[in-house]
Amino acid sequence: MQTVDQLGALRSTLETWRLAGQRIAFVPTMGNLHAGHHSLIRLARERADRVVASVFVNPTQFGPNEDYGRYPRTPEADAEGLRASGCDLLWLPSVETMYPYGAERTVQVRVPQVTETLEGAHRPGHFEGVATVVARLFNQVRPDIAVFGRKDYQQLAVIRYLVRDLAFPIEIVGADTRREADGLALSSRNQYLSETERMQAAGIHACLQWMREASQAGLAREAVEAGAIERLSAAGFVVDYAAIRRPDLGLPEAGEGEAGEGEAAQGGAAQGGAGKAGAGGSGARVALIAARLGRTRLIDNLEFEV
Ligand code: PAF
Image (cartoon, rainbow, N blue to C red):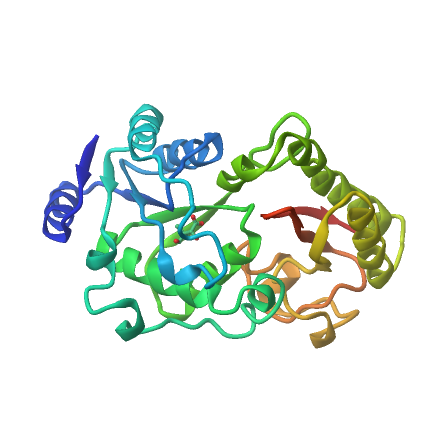
């Protein structure tokens, strides 16, 4: 595996591969890689001739009171894990390479609507930071495909809208969430949890399963959401949201009870479509939770049919 930290070196290697007709897959990350990331690399490996991963802890997607400073940085272990999973090239840009004129003077990419709810409502500016850095990374790497985890469900939807609206010729692939034996989704932030919090944390997946079962049993969306908040709070979580949405993550008021239009009827933005959304009637749904245990904020989701 080659490691490069200069744009010129990145471009010349990628150009050699392109001239040889090789298909390039890209996995952007913020490092501190775990088994979930390694499975993204392996999926990329199956879909392309060459795999590029980036490790960049992007300052612009963290709020002023968030964990940018203490976000775990483990460069040696990351490089070793990437090599073992089949990555060909590690792109390791500095903050100066990514934002040469300063982050505040960089063109911002804003994806409307889908970013205004859920994570977007609780983390102002987060998705502008994500969309901006991902657009920049896409232009640097110019991959044929890019792989993102479905654990960051709303992020995946945002990336799909970004690619659609800015006409990036990139196929976006969503990869299934990897979990611990008790259901906790793998995340770099799990290591912030104390021993007791780690045991409590499995309650998020259990609650998502309850939301699925309650929805399938016919409980109204509002009742499921309220029930989930009650359960999580009783289990010691401070809840940001517990929500049921159609997979395109449209606001429920936009199409409550309607089947949706166009691609949304077959699956929403996080699955590859776009369109109107509500959470009434039958069809595909996603339950999403964001909740805190102490200083650790966890997110997870579960897709299901009603
Ligand atoms: O999911 C992440 O790790 C980050 O949000 C991403 C996509 C690498 C952008 O910084």
